Length: 252
Image (cartoon, rainbow, N blue to C red; front, side):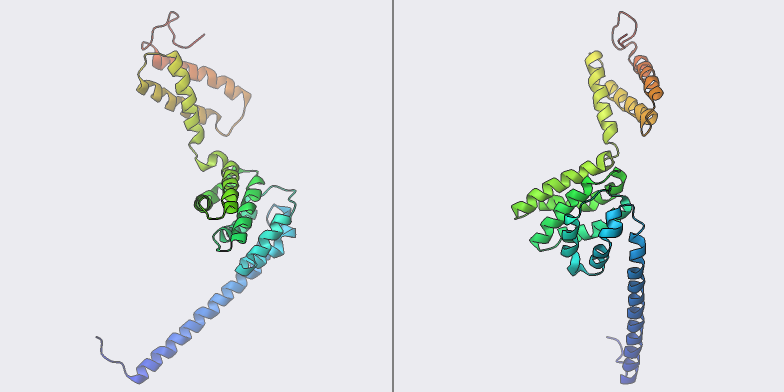
């Protein structure tokens, strides 16, 4: 136990605490006011015309007042979108959709989930929606077991649209893994008797070579060059491991 404080000292400490609390509250209110003032300017910079104009006031109101979330989402559902959804537009939309999906109101949860499906279907570039997958997918997975069949169905569709919108960016190695599977299957059928470890190594290296040569770039000449390079690489590694009347395991 510490030494008892005098009444005067206690009053002084309380007064100082109240003054600090008032300063914090004033700073918080000032920051909140500044944020609210900046929202209209920021949202006007989004590339999606519907978000920047038609839905602008609804989104700002809902961001500042959670009780208006349902009203905003209903307005989004009634809006006909003529433009793709960009990353900045999603940055304004997703906090509202996440809030709606986590709500206790079944109607709000269902409409927010349906809205996720619609918004993700409008995504043009997977890199815009991919950052939201880690926070959104677990909520949708959880609602796959929801007591409401409508919410379960909506969650199934929303998850499919989310992953479809993000594409290979959900798993950056997805394309390489698929390339390896195709290569291993092809070499395995041709090079019978070769150890699986060797075929697996060739699958990894060929997939890496294709990613380096072709990943993100589409040029006809690159595709032409890649065929010969891969043939040479596989032939070099399999020479001596399988019999061949031509001296090369690679079909001519």
